[in-house]
Picture 1 (cartoon, rainbow, N blue to C red):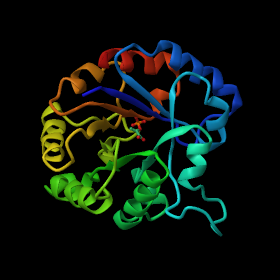
Picture 2 (picture 1 turned 45 degrees about the horizontal axis):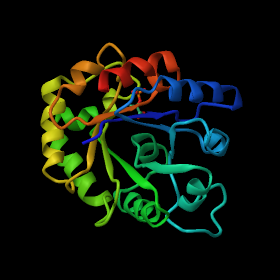
Picture 3 (picture 1 turned 90 degrees about the vertical axis):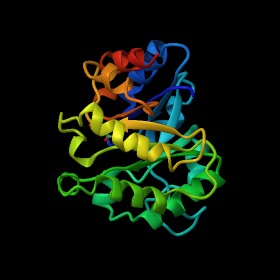
Picture 4 (picture 1 turned 120 degrees about the vertical axis):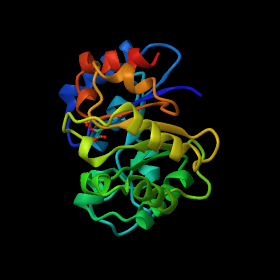
Length: 231
Ligand code: PEP
């Protein structure tokens, strides 16, 4: 399975940062896939930068009266080939449920986008021994029956932007669990405080096919060693 280094820029990036997109494209090693989830405002302007692009969310409807939202076909039209769905920040900030995420993923598939669906437990849920139950329920509830190009990202909420990373054994347990429940060919990414210094150890874990990277994807100099560790 081809490895995937995906960056999630979140609500960061203006036209001044297009040079960083081009620098990531130039630094990308051969033999792996690289995907940057840019803010929607930059997608069209980055479409010729030489790297695959993703949106960070889409609406479940194809079009209509949904002020401020974007349809999956609009993201595709702007140059995206994939879309992140169900990121924990959207689950928390916008109350997104598994049902809503599945509907968005169906819309993404209908528009030809590969859905990158995020699952992950909170610290309370992990400490309560419920990590597998939580990610299992999220997976069952949010992944559509048909999802060509599906990517699932395991992102423990307590590891996102915190510098805290699960142990390799903890990642291995969740990824093995997910691997038994996703369609064949689905890539499983780990996400949460991935850096150049911990990437190789994480990528050595079975059933880890790459990373979804937040903070360290913003600077090409930080993202390059993560891409290299995957190559
Ligand atoms: C993310 O938000 O998807 C993420 C993994 O963030 P960070 O790498 O900054 O922890």
